[in-house]
Length: 67
Image (tube, rainbow, N blue to C red):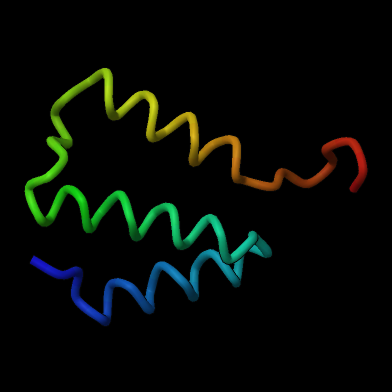
């Protein structure tokens, strides 16, 4: 099942409004599409932790070194 276009657009808008990289929205959308298609179980704690780590690593935080 494909992710609804409205949800995809909302994620892209929120990421852009948060001054984050477009790569972050792509990663979030990819994860949600994997869950929606059934190829990934959102309740699988081990996989969820790895995905969240990837997402957290992609987030740009104000005040980080180099900002």
